Structures are given as C-alpha cells and as structure tokens.
Length: 433
Image 1 (cartoon, helix red, strand yellow):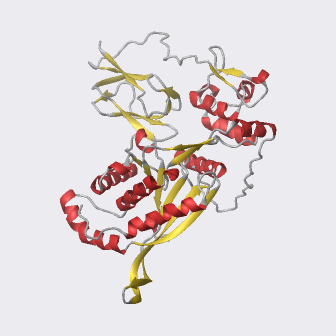
Image 2 (cartoon, rainbow, N blue to C red; image 1 turned 90 degrees about the vertical axis):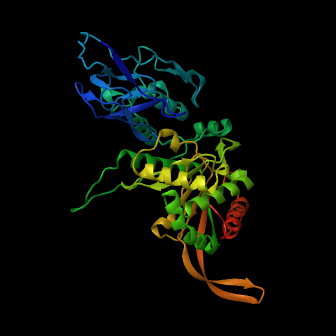
Image 3 (cartoon, helix red, strand yellow; image 1 turned 45 degrees about the vertical axis):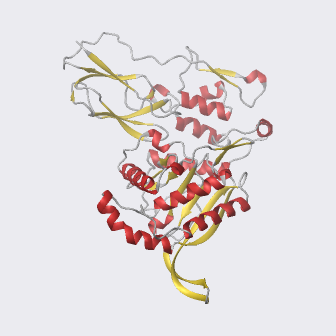
C-alpha cells in the first residue's frame, strides 16, 4: 500500500519549530488535495498545513500542544485509501539528541551542556532563550513545565526569567556591559497587584495578544524611545487621489489609498538617511541594504500583525499599491505566510485610520524607528504667495517618528521627518499611475 508522509514545512529562515495547535482531520478521514490538515503556531504567525495529496489520513504522529521541528513527519496518508495495521510498538519520530554548549555570564565552572540524550528534553526555542539569559542547566531542571509530559515551554522559561528579576530576551549586550550586569542584575519593575470587584469580567489574553504584550514590553526595555513630530500639508495628494481613485478602481479592480504614497516617500527618505534603516547589535550598528517596510495592520480580533513589503525602493507606486492591498487583505483573512511578516527594517503605522491626530508608537524590534501617520484634516493655514501671505483651507496631517535614542539623535530624527515633509508636500498632482 502506497503512503505519503506530511512534513512540518519550512516556515521562514529563522523558524526551526512549530506547535501543533489543532488537528482539523482525524484518522480515517478522506482527504482531498489542498485540504487543511492541521493548524500550527510559531512565535511569528499562525497558519494551516494543507495536504499536497489525496487519500485517507491513517496516522497522526503528534498530539495537539506538541512542538515539532521543521522537516519532521507529522502525519501519514494512504494514497489508495486503505488502512494500515499499526505495529504494536511503532515509535513516534524521535527528536534528535543535540548537544548545545553555551557560555553564560557566570564563572567558568558553571559552563554547561544542554539536552544530551539521557537528560530532560528542551526545544530549540527554550534552549535559545536559556542561552541568551544565562539560565544554567541546573536552573532549567528546576523549572516546572506546563507542556506535554512536563516539558518546559517558552511561557514557562519566560515566567521563570521574569520571576528571578532579569530582563526578557532582547538584543545581545556588549561583553563589558554583560559582565557588569552579571555582577549587579538590573531589577525589573513589578506590576501592581490587581484586585477584582463584583461584576468585573476576566478575559484571558489569546496567544497572539500575549506575544504582542511581551514584544511591546521588551521594546520599551531595550530602546530609550524619543518621538518627534512634524505637520505636513498633503493637499496635493488628497486632490490627486480624489481625481484618480475612480478610474484606478475601474482599471485595476482595487482601491488606491494614501498608504502607498507614504510608503514610497518613506523608502526615498530611508535611502537619504540610511541610519534610520538600521538595527543595533550590542555596540554595533547594522545599516540594512534592503528597504523592507512593515505595515501595522489591525485585525478583526482586535490584535495586530505587521506584514512586510520587501524592497519598497525598487517598486513603482502601482506596484506598491497592489502589494499593500494584497498584504492587508490576506492579513485580515489570516492568510499570510511566515516569510511575509519577517525581515522588516522600518515600520509605518496609521493612526489616522481611527481618526487619531497622532501618537507615540513603540518601535518594532530589532528596528530603530517607526513612523506614525495621523488623520488628514482640513485646517486653516498660512500660505506664502507672490502677493503676500494668505489664509487658506488645506489638508494637514501630523507625522510622528519614534526612534531609538541609542543610535538616532534628535537631529537625525528631525532631518528624516523634514525629508518626509518635503517629499509629501512636493507630490505632483498631475502624476500618472
């Protein structure tokens, strides 16, 4: 009887494992090609695994809640629809015994080796966090695991790190700084105790909201945030869009918004000021070659996801428009691929979507800046003309740039915003698309 193994697929360059959150098919179910078999989750995105073949699902090799490495078989399908008699003691695919040595910020005698063949199993993600935070093997053994068979999960080790007063995983620190901190740990602020009263409703955060919460707290701990503001007259852009939006939708079958214009201008400003298109690694500044701009997108669930437009500077305004619409639509439908939310070098968030004038956004680590776009409103403004100053009704918006003050000073942040203002106010109202 011919069978086919369903493999945990490659989910992105930096993702090495995923958690099976829900099986959508049971053993004995007939499967059509492209039927969704299972829902999986990584620390980046949730997605489904479809079947590439038609047949009968005869075996699930992992249970819900288990963590599976990329490339590992997770299910078996009979191509001719027949059942298979299972061997009495057919083993589950074994996880490779990997010896991962790492040096923590501790004395030499405390250097340890994790997860040899006869020790407690730790997932690659847990071992990576332990390495970054200097959690020794003896400490790991003491952590009570909430996963299957008592396995330590990501949430377990992060909760342990929080309890012992260390900062959550962020960026690698320079050796000298790490040495100082290993001698004198920085105390983490404790959240106040919260009491409930009659009539209160307690709603547990879902998985995505927990990830967002941890990421936001980590960003504020890692980067000293500074926010600068500038107002921009976008009357030319508003008039241009009003003129072309109907013909564009008729020709291309989709809407044109202001977002693609902001992305185009941001890409040009990032080319002029590459220090904004950067990351920090200890005392090293990494200037990114590619301009990959993330688009903060609100989901129907109330959560947030940031799909990334790659190489924005190489695309036309039409190309940016189509990509923005595509990513935004699939983001709201939970159809993004893991690679489409990775690799961002800069982020734009649109406060104006909800009629907010401006705000102070939190940097999307490991980037060093994020641009917030406010609502566009008609306001009286002073216009300089050859006949003197006049007051006119103009379309004005506020741009807010939050940046990492470790590497971006106020002067650089101000120059970037001024460049954005020049590009947007200089938009050609007769431009063709």
